[in-house]
Length: 301
Image 1: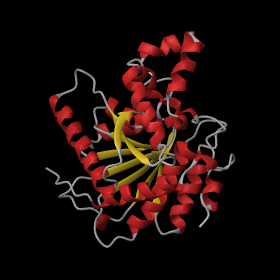
Image 2: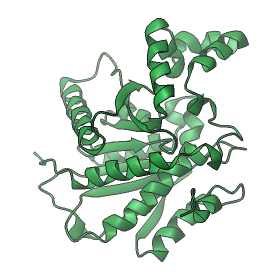
Image 3: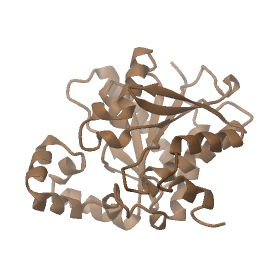
């Protein structure tokens, strides 16, 4: 089989209508979906029949953004995860038992990268979740999962004034996610600081969410070592105010921090994020993670 698949290459063409592509891909394979417009951003919600849900267990909401930076193919950021989850949705539709999975392809993730979380399309979505009282889902964000052989669970530092319940709920979700990784790729996964994705919007709205990505093992190893030797690197990765102004004022500082980040991340938002950077191992590992996620049952109490 060709890698990446020919149809995937259609998805990353410069003129592709990515929202239409996702919905048509799903429809042609018997999976329903609909778009919802929130704050000018068009999100795609996959619709599974009620028979796939058991109220005794938690809903698992899986999120991947389908927008991409202007001028970039976005092969890894975030087309690879989109592609894997599109195909997973087809598999879920064919299951004979319940899976309790909700899938949302979000719009506008890239807007918040250098401006602020409230500009993200997912912020409006998370606000709706909050308003409707949908705060008990297990929320998993998949971003840039098409390159490398090491799953990375994003480390998250919670704000100091969050409630004890939020801390406990987040810790439980984080531990359950680690259990998914232990079961699906034993001995080969890590937790590291990762740039915020749509998880930032849910966290900002007081809803626990975790983010997963992938890195090549050599990049993950070097990055982990650099984090130890330079404590300011975390602030740069998370685009925190501690380094943001300095980087804006001093291009040399920005170049330094970029050189310390994994090559995979340096390809983002550029023409270099093309299909040639993707690796088959990532797709196989992600398939294991998604399969394990579908099988997970967490009592709803």
